[in-house]
Image 1 (tube, rainbow, N blue to C red):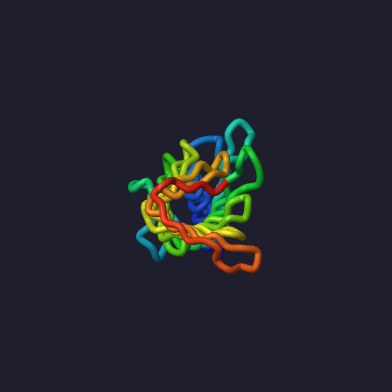
Image 2: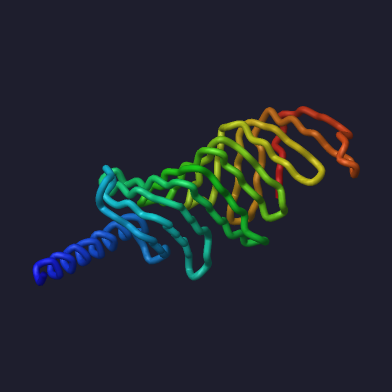
Amino acid sequence: MLFRKMLRTVLLGFLLVMGGTIAYFILGSSNHQLHLGEFSLTNSDADLNIDKMHVVQNTKGVREWELWADSAKVYRQKGLTILKNLKLRFYSDEGDPSHVTAQEGTMQNESRNIRISGNVTILASNGVSMKTDSLYFHSKEKRIDSDSKVLMEGARFRLVGTGLQGHTDIGKYKLKEKVSATIYGGSGHSLMEKRENKLTRAN
């Protein structure tokens, strides 16, 4: 009985130490906060399995972005964290935050750059929505990029293009090329269809 209690205490201490160690490799600096649900070290090739992970990035006391994931697998030597069912919130200097949801993602533990894929949806602060297959978030540059096909929709327009660029700190996004636009009237009927290769902004 005493042996079991001692073993349980040792295992709990080991999990806490490992959790702190892995948290260090995920965060790497005091600019980040990490909130964990349940985590385990078994039944996986990863160093740590996490349920309900929440990461916050702050710079000089200013919140830049937040990440939520239903589950995460942390690979210490690879320097990667595999995310499932994730949500990102980007805080803008000029208005309300933008929101991104996706089925999966891969975060580089040191840089916090994130590759996102699977039914990616971006909701900008002005209500414009963008849908694509994948995108890449550059944490330090506060920028997102995609080379995939993108559908951008607002209350009065519908745009389809290839490639997307965005600056999360100012909440502005633009399609790169091969843009096809449909403009709607007040009744919802199409007034004009136009194709162009110029960059189209949503801000």
